[in-house]
Image (cartoon, rainbow, N blue to C red; front, top):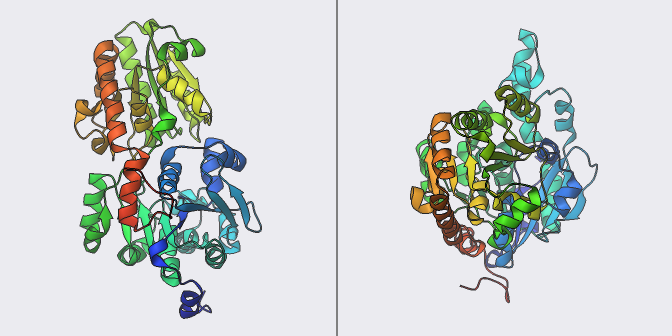
Length: 458
């Protein structure tokens, strides 16, 4: 882009700042298929059926303000821009082709998100390692087609940028584009708190300083950022991830169990999400459930797992190795909301054993359904359950299957207490994670203004 005059771009992209009505939203990842392939979801299913999570929660919250959202995705499967609609929210989706330089590098990568050069490119001779290391640092920056992105943002009249993560090369590129277009750039924290390259470490301190603000829900992450980047403490706002509580109304427990063929007397624990064994702590969950059932009558208990991912084979091996019989695993990424609600509504307790998170939405979905939660103290969890049991949750140390099993047993063995915790969890969700509540905070922090005739009713 050295032949593009910043002054010329600024002139072409001047915006009316008080009326920011179209947000360009960038999910994490070099390519959109890296995420969708991992959960077995096609782009058509993503557009027509997929809801929930931080992404669509934000879109729904901004929609309350009359703010439009365009989801920008980069793909290796298109040769020219492709325009789609996200049916459930009405958001526009713009899929741009990845740059040729990135695709050329990508051909030689085994795993572009690996920690080491060897894991990314495979075994190599010593003299090749330096070259591959440099290429590895540059590649994520090349994945974003800057000039086509500028053209599309101009065409769609985007006047605010929001990135899923700030500890990621695409955020650096977006900050640069924001400066060229004279529009603000913000980012959220959803779990990305590491840097994979020396180039990132050098660039990030400048782009964070040049950004307009960070949305960080986790106190732990806020402390890390303020310690590492001391100049940006005034740019941080604590805003929780929103969920559409109208879509997460609990169903009748008895009817849900009848529909799923679960006996009414069975005590049910549930987990749902993307199958990533280490990050999501699913090995800890299997171990904890084995310990719990070893000391109780397993015939009266059932663990339900709902979800799929790249580690499905590894999880299956863990389950078989633990010889768990009292388990139902729905090994697919369930897009149908009614089906998810049926499983959640049939449960007595929700389990969240993650080692690493940002600000997870899955336990909030369970809370909205009136289910108590037993969760490991990964990032975001202490903030969700700030008051512990009073907020409907039992928080245990990470990587502690004994503590997880003990807390699960407490709830499963005391149904009345579990229902009371579930009611508290529902109230916590209603008070702190609703679209209305989060939209008001986003309006203040992002500086977006409701379109005339739209907005919030407080």
